[in-house]
Image (tube, rainbow, N blue to C red):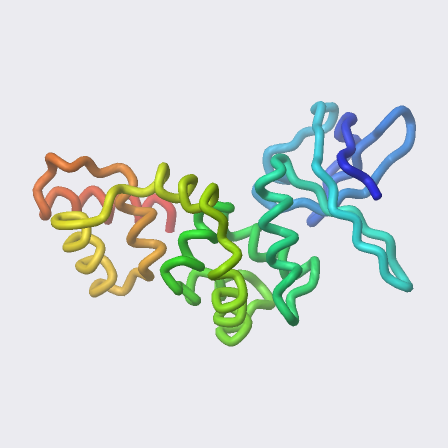
Length: 195
């Protein structure tokens, strides 16, 4: 129906933004991390997914086509509707979701409101084969290489109670020349900043 909407932010609410396009205000539901960065008068362009039901005509907007693709992939999972898919993207970026799916980290996905452990496991099961090579490349660009000291550091963080996805994210800033102890310290500092 709509490919994209481009205009100015009229106002933001709890879970949507009103985009003024030549005097017409469109209500666009968007991830919270996007909504939190928008201010009245900002120019925006959202790639749109249109959800039409008997009682509603809703627009879901994303800043990139990759995010729109991931959102639609989530919708293909049985039992996941637009609001649940948006909730997942509220707590996980595209890269983090792809990593959680590939590593089977249901705890990270279950952090989304309305997504329980079984739903998270279903998302992993149904999306595992749908994660494209482009998304895996995107994940690998944001994730340190595995092997040797990185694996030991990740395993140590998991033993401390972090999920595999949280451990992987915390290790993003470490370098190969660091000792195991320094990697763990740096990752713990990073994890505490996010927590």
